[in-house]
Length: 356
Image 1: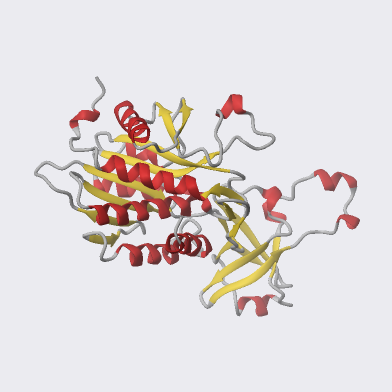
Image 2: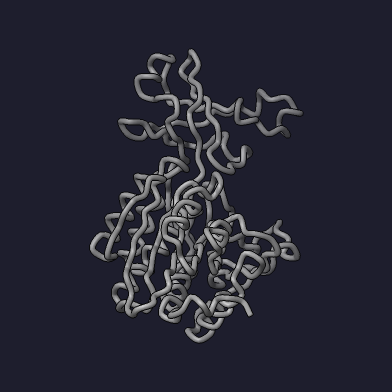
C-alpha cells in the first residue's frame, strides 16, 4: 500500500464515527471524492453517495457499500461527583471496556477519559469472575463535580475508544474500528481507481453507509434511493486463524489469505461466479465462506430493496472484531480493491444476473 493510501486509512481510523455521529468521517469521504465522481451528495440519513456515469445506452447500476459507522458509547447520566455513565452504541463487549482510555466527543472537541475499574485487591472472589454491567460502568474525565463536568460534556455526547492505528509485523496493522472504516476506505479507493482507468459500461455508485451497527439502517435508505441492479457490500469478516475459533463452524479463513467471498442465500449465484472467476483470472487471492442464512451486513438489505437486487458480500478477514485492537492485513485491502475494480469492468447487463 502506498503512503498516500495508508495516510487515508489512518485518517479514517482516527476519525470518530459511532452510529448516528458519522459526519466527521463522511466529510473526509466527500473531500476525497469531490472532483473524482461526477456527483457527490449526502442524503437525509447521512449516507455519502458518489456517482460516476458509465458509457453506453443501457447501463446497469452498480452500488458498492461500505458502512462508515463504528461501535461506541453515549453519555446517559452524570452523577454529583462528575462521573459519566453511558450505554453502548452497537455490539460492544462489556468485558473489554473497564480500564480503557476513551474520548468523549463534545461540542468543543474530544475530552479524554478513562473507564474506571475497582482494584483487584478490593474485589471479592466472586466479583472477579463477574462482568460489570454497562449501567454500572463509568467514565472519569478528572472533574470533581457534576457542574464542572457539565461545563465540558453534554448528555447524548458520543464516546469512542482512543484511536491508535499501529503497524505490527509485516503488512499487518491494528486499530479500533476497522469494522468498517476499512470498507469505506475500499469503496472510496475503487471509485478513484475506476475514474483513473476510464468509465466502464455501468453507472457506478459508491456509498459510505451509516448506522449499520444498529440495524443496517443507512443501507436500507440508500439502496432504495440509488435503486441498483447490482449491490456489493464491503465489510469485515471473522478470521478463524487464531486460538479459540472453531474452524468447523466458520471455515478456514486467514488474515493475509485474500478477501472473503460469501456464498449462500443472501448472494446472487451469477454475481458470486463472476466475482470468483474474476479473482481467478486476475490472480487475486480469494477465500470462500459458506453463509447459509442472510448475512448481518448491508448485503442483506440491498438484496431485498424494491423488487430485488443482485447482491454479494466481499469481506476482509479481521481478528478481534469489535475490540480496540482489531488486526488485518494491508494486502487483503489491496486485493479487495483490485477485485472490485476489475469486476466493475465485467458488468454490462442487468439481465444476466437473473438465476436460471
